[in-house]
Length: 242
Image 1 (cartoon, rainbow, N blue to C red):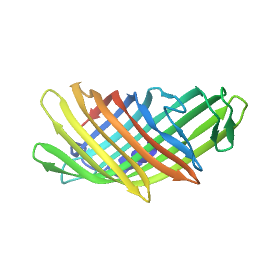
Image 2 (cartoon, one colour):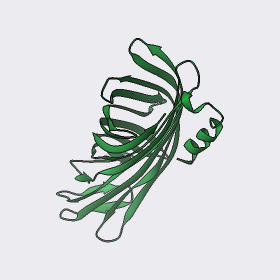
Image 3 (cartoon, helix red, strand yellow):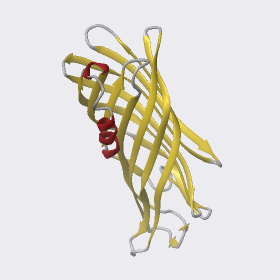
């Protein structure tokens, strides 16, 4: 979020009427599927780890310029993760951990996904379109352990330059529809996301936002591999100044 505040300082000299300032805090009730891999030892989120997620927070800050005038700046921070516990039925090996039948396999994942985007808007009929670039930072870890104190940790500290697209349309009575996508893929790695939703701004400057968001990752680092898809509804409250 500090990056977004820096972007706001760069635009402070712009005429206030040319900018649309907004900030929001939302809860993300996401599910997760995929797997982790350690040198060929693979554990599935559902079948092997029984991972359960809990709603986590997402924060965003945007400065939107008039089409053809100022570029948009957008920053967000999304937190996600989960825990799992399963009694294994057969011999299970993951990295340095070997579990006998009947032992308990535990897992924990905690991540923070941060984005900073700059995009250039234009009018496309009744829609406001904007395209640009984004920089994503994914920071977190996956920890696999057993009841005897053995554990293995997979840390992630990854940066992804991405392409970014934003579409929105305002209607009467303070309703706005919006869709957004960004992502990049190379050398087998992948990081991308999309979301679509609506804002209800009946009590300006406050608005309620409801959306669906999906994030996708495929990352390999030092022989460790993470392949994950997270998706679920967003619901939150924000304010908008013009």
